[in-house]
Length: 110
Image (cartoon, rainbow, N blue to C red):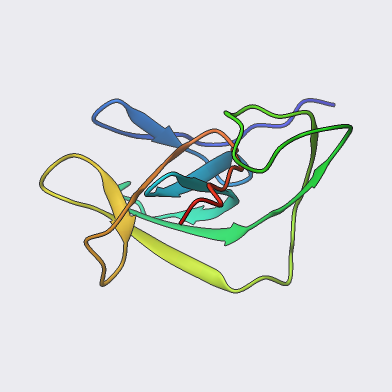
């Protein structure tokens, strides 16, 4: 049985509910799952995922790491909006950016 999902393209980014994404701020990146997308594609809602590492992954190593991303259906839904710069950022914030593809990394040097 095949699944059909609609895709909304804004600039070069296409987000669909169920797709993996990440929020990057500084040297850190956090995994998310898209929960919904506005009709215009200018607003995206997502829930933060958990990352469970396999083997000897260091927290500050580059993505992708070996491990499993665990979707958290009960996580709080967060809102990201398209800005004039062409990037998505958390609603009410000018920091970081939101993009396609799950990723997790942390730089412990701060």
